[in-house]
Length: 242
Image 1 (cartoon, rainbow, N blue to C red):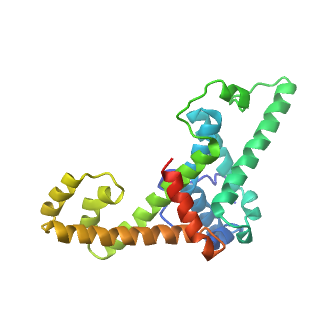
Image 2 (spheres, rainbow, N blue to C red; image 1 turned 180 degrees about the vertical axis):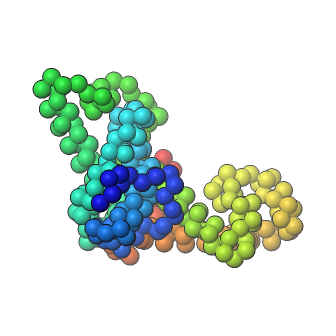
Image 3 (cartoon, rainbow, N blue to C red; image 1 turned 120 degrees about the horizontal axis):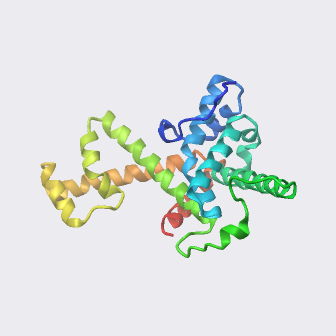
């Protein structure tokens, strides 16, 4: 196994996270390690969000996230992932909670032994600096998971548009797709694209439908039961609304 298995989390390539990738990631092979690195890269930000909410320390959250994924990349933790247990999102949240619990136990042992800690894992200390704007850790994890799914789905749709020779149009309207453009901006964009407003609006509507299909495909890939897709979609939009 490589001596430094940690991936470049922010440069991980777009790759749909499906249970087949999780199963492949369990393999002790170059392909398995690559699949595991892709999974870790895709779900890095939700883990950081959970830890940041739990400990109110962004720098410590990043340090702990890297430690968590290094442990995952070591090949042990991922072997407990089971498609029959449901959502990959739920598995990952449980894994990071387990990791934090073990770290806290180790921190307490170190305190009792008279050692010093570089990162505080004390829940009471974290609670001393409440932030009413901060969601509880589980909800923060879900919100960042939802944002990650949308971002990955947007990238999937952009790849499709580029393959169709419509990459420039996607780039022009992506702020409309993610809800960051006003009606006035849309009118100006229609003119820039050389389209009537009605034709422009119809083209954007079609892209919105395709984006939703990309989101459903992304979500479905992390579930063991196709019937659960709508419930997971509802959870995603609820998380985005928090």
